[in-house]
Length: 172
Image (cartoon, rainbow, N blue to C red; front, side, top):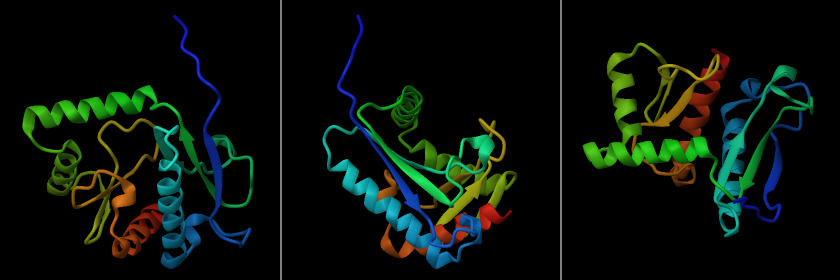
């Protein structure tokens, strides 16, 4: 009854700036754009490995979040399985689409823009908001205004707007 597999995966560190004293929110939009492009490139490369089913860039900040390296950085992991919480979320999104024939994330963006209650920032390409019933303090979602199924599908010209949205949200 126990499933097992070989230990396979990837764990990479993305150093966000050569300057030890600066944090992500202190970087310029061009510098943040470079970090976001690094995520895109690492995601695309890791997706080429058929053993990986899930790739996630993430950032922890501060000792309480488990940061063990003082230099500002983020991480990219690749796993051979999709975590249950993610699989459940995807199943819910699929069920919403079957019922409404619309993307749930596009519906969320439309509703947040209409209500403007949890809106943190918006620009021509992205919307930043605190989600309804956040899972943890200070959770924000940075969502594209136009439907997109994957981060790496972001148009090259939109990464500057994504960097601007992220920088503004982090500074707030």
